[in-house]
Amino acid sequence: MVKTSIRYLVLVTGFSGSGRSSTLKYLEDLGFFWIDNLPLQLVPAFMDYLVEEEVQRYHRGAIGIHMRGPGCQTLLDNCRQQLLTQVEQVDILFLEANFEQLVRRYRETRRRHPLAIDRTVREAIELEATYLEPLRAMADLIIDTSATTVPALKDRLDMLFHTELGQSPDLMIFLRSFGFKYGTNSDADMVLDGRFLANPYYDPSLRHLTGLDEPVQRFLEQSHEAEEFLDRLQALFDYLVPRYRQEKKRYLTVDIGCTGGQHRSVYLVTRLAQRLTHKGFQVLSRHRDLNLGHTQEFCL
Image (spheres, one colour):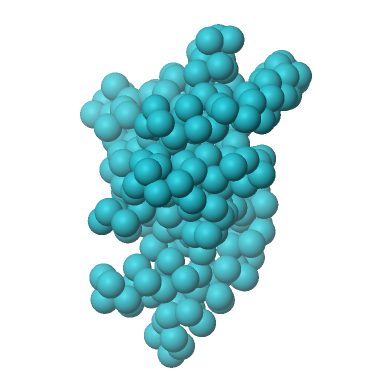
């Protein structure tokens, strides 16, 4: 079988409304050849088509696939095995969001869920979840877009696909602050709780500020507990990162939360990112709920 110029292929799947279209469009910006809504049974034949001269400049490809029926796990597994005779590496990227967020997105866009022909949107999402559960278990990469803006989704894809196949990407550490009052993220490898620190929110002069502001930072550094916590976290990363590298782990997502995601968690993520970067680790940090009152553009 003739191989295409594409050496790395990403199969993008997951919940309807979780951001597949936005993901594929941004992967194009990262140098991927992509196509959406291709029946799984036609994917190997499509890869044969890519032998044509017009796509030989691409070395990475992405295919959006819909999996909404019984037996999809076997179909996907067989497809990946066949694709590995055509390309060097195949990863499955699974996109998800919580049910409430998916219902809201369908309500706001007034689109009909593909499985909502004779059922409500929520019933359709719950049915889709039963079909997708085994696919999620097969996924190499999982992104939860429940509280993710389009720019934040692009940052996450940058983190995952910032190197070309054939290079040796270092472990990327993704640090994310959040507020427990707005819910946790299901895609975190580790969740840490910073609510034991004194809360600047109860100081009227600090309430309107964030963990990025110097007065809040000085407040948190007064008791030395924040610094001790950061020392212990740095020691934990010094221990874990070499072992994750040994296991060829590509990224590590660590969430640090406080009550509202404005002060303590933002401070901890910022300071920890500075420490780990100084140690030579690759770090990407984001603040999920910072200024949450502002309008956010959710990926659809």
